[in-house]
Length: 160
Image (cartoon, rainbow, N blue to C red; front, side, top):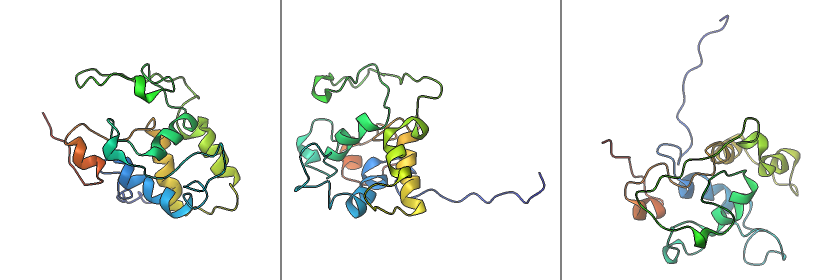
């Protein structure tokens, strides 16, 4: 109350509308894929894009690798994405517990905050990853034109 109001600023590319390929993958490509790519050591997560067009869910390989490290909650997800039936009309709401959700509860955030093998993230890069963690590891922000969103295009939601 004793300072001027903060001026709102737009979020990073990929935050409006929310889109993992535009929000998160550029950070991974710039800072992570050099170690977590094709020649990564056994047991290290694969943080590359992968061939999303061959995947029935249109998700990047990196997404599959990061979700278990982000404290994702869903009644459908139990570690085997291939077992999830594709049901366009079925809504699976997230299940959360106070204090056990989002970036603060994420092992990924703890690792990045502590420092990970000399990787230096800019403030915006960390903001992008935190937004991903805080959004319950979302991939798309809406269901309009999934094919175009999977390709990284800006697709605005359709209001009904």
